[in-house]
Length: 179
Image (cartoon, rainbow, N blue to C red; front, side, top):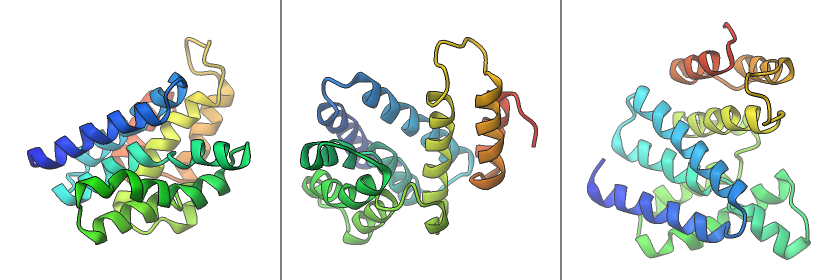
């Protein structure tokens, strides 16, 4: 990936830290989802533009949460999907990216909890990365080892969400499950 794309991704990461200020859990979630999306994308050998879209979507995927809380005093997945694309467009505006790249990122953000809407490898990888992180975060984080409920969540996702060879490998190794 070229230096300009890497620079934009760094700036997006910093924007999301500011956006989620005073909420380290959300900052950590965003960083973890990006890390797995980047890793899976590299393992799947995505071309540069697709890798960029995947990583930018990972940084921005939950941008609608804070917007929903400020506007409605609550957040849920529907509000995240509804409000996220406009917030993402605003976050991306300064970078003067091609319109098709911005629209693709916004499509992914606007549907990232709707697995039936997955229509490409970039979206697939974001969904897998978010699932990997959520499977653990939804569990008892005080557990040193993966508990049975977390393993069941991971196994359920393996059969319903995961399609990339790399994502499956990471999920299975991380949660100690077999395909």
